[in-house]
Image: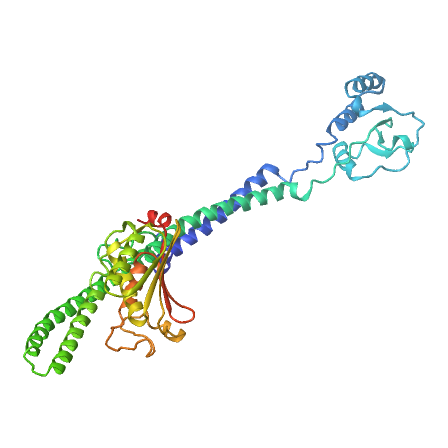
Length: 440
């Protein structure tokens, strides 16, 4: 029963076995048909000398007194044969041999004898002794050269069989791998978004089983993340009430220094809760991208920071269209500019946009990040080294993580680069308008 299960056409093993068997059957059918058409077991040597052999046998069967008239008729009807009667006192010199005479020997039989003619001018002619002793001369049949190797019937048959089986194999392999290709494309776009289309459960049995397993795994992971988000949201909601009460109590503290410190700690706690919830909320429920002027968005962010007293500069075109989620992009760039003005005295935002690629560089003149820490600071809740993270209460290590997730959600990427002589460049690369439109 297990063997029958492997041979089922619904499984990949059964389809591959069927492909191999079909290829073998097709190859044998082509070779058999070629064998029946060519019949190499039948002698085909009489194709070349057939007219000469027929004329010679006709002369041999004709009485001697009627032979001159028949010879004259054959000469006029078949001048290319060059048949003429030899004198009776002509003495044959040996036997005429050669590959081109084997067919004539085979057809005429042992009662006829072939011999060469000694005259140099008649090197292409042979003598033939008839059964009654009479002798005639005729043009020797042309020497048939064997067909070239590539032109032989068997080679043509083999070549045709190989081409046919190859085309059959390519077509069948494409039919077998089509479900795998579609499954790989669907798995590549695998998302935890609850509105995303599940993986297609079609194709061979193994592919359907794997698709079902991945769909169930996605449902379980989505459920776990939803439960985590709801739990953290509940904790945040419950913590806001005691934080508010503590703020009210701090207002009645007489010591101004202690009151300001307590209020700063409470503000930090509230900001931490809001950033954690912002990191967890709506990351998997993405709005559809829209045609947005990202140059205007970046200039707006620069103006907002300039109004707050920070030194921020924009370098780039006045307008640049792209298919993006404007709120998410605004949020990600804002996080990066906040880091730039926090760890440096100025921030420079440079925009380069074309049809294929959009690059946004946020540069600062701060202490920068070491090459060792660059591999870690993009993770959630990981902050830079002590040189860059001068104020431990300044952030929670979520700004870069949120920006990187937003870039990935747009089909782009976020990377960190050194700025000379010092500082950091955070680069966001997004697909251009030409590449983003088909995806949208």
